Image 1 (cartoon, one colour):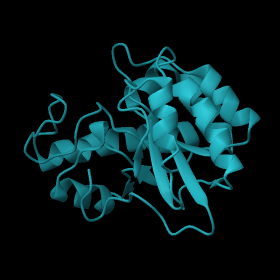
Image 2 (image 1 turned 90 degrees about the vertical axis):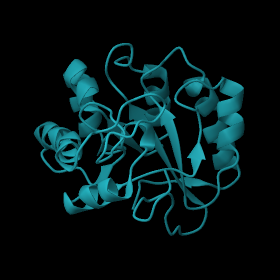
Image 3 (image 1 turned 45 degrees about the horizontal axis):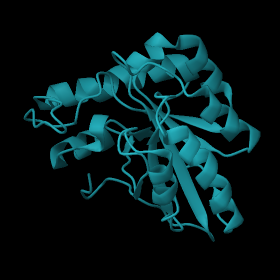
Image 4 (image 1 turned 90 degrees about the horizontal axis):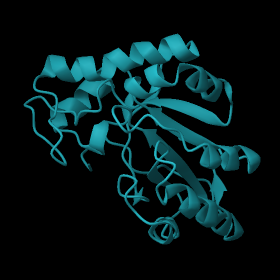
Length: 211
């Protein structure tokens, strides 16, 4: 999750922080936390939304609405939500892509889907589980996208309580990137974010898109 070439922070101007949300797609993972998205819109908080191809295909109209909203940038969260590998290495018991070609396909299938959705290529990629190997990192960059990790794991794959999410987010530092999930509305993610983001703003943080 922390190899050369993976962006886990950025050079900030003042107390800037980037929030990102994954939509992982697939069985049980195609829902939408509409309360969270409505809060981001009401508070004018920009975010990068890493959408998996399966999630886009399950929610094409909503994905199109999100893509049309300038508050949100659409990132590539892969085609089948696999750890990005050239030898099949697994993460969290999820099998990784088994070859260089499979890694290319995992990136490129959703790259093309996002172009169809937004009219332009995604700038950023986050692998399923956020795990890569070093060759896969190079593949992402050669395909024209920047691999993105995180500095704050806010919700541990949407398994954390709202209190844990809030506590994790309050460790934010300038130039950091948070990782959370937007496809499990019954998790603690939304409530934790609704508490943490105003508290961070009160501490002087400005929320920005990934540069």
